[in-house]
Image (tube, rainbow, N blue to C red):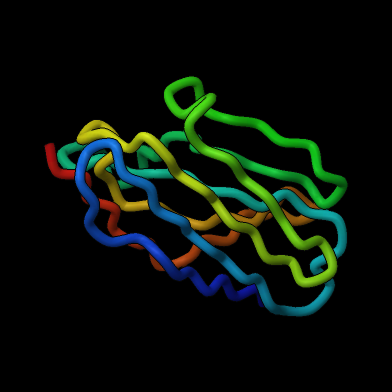
Length: 119
């Protein structure tokens, strides 16, 4: 079983920055994709928007709304990822979920961490 431990998040003023971290543990993690998705209040509980993902080999993908503002990095040997978020705005307010998709395309999710940006 895969476990994802998230840290970071919280409240920040518009224009500020935050860092989210996620550490994966478990057996047979192998090649995988790790990243972050977010859920906005008032939307279906299963509706999560792509924020950023990064593969074991370093290939990255960003959601259109965060390109140029967020940066995802990972320590491959430790299966940890960090999401540096800058120039945050109220529209970024959401619950952010760490995700790991393993080599069998099975998804694992963290508990979620709240990010609130005040105007």
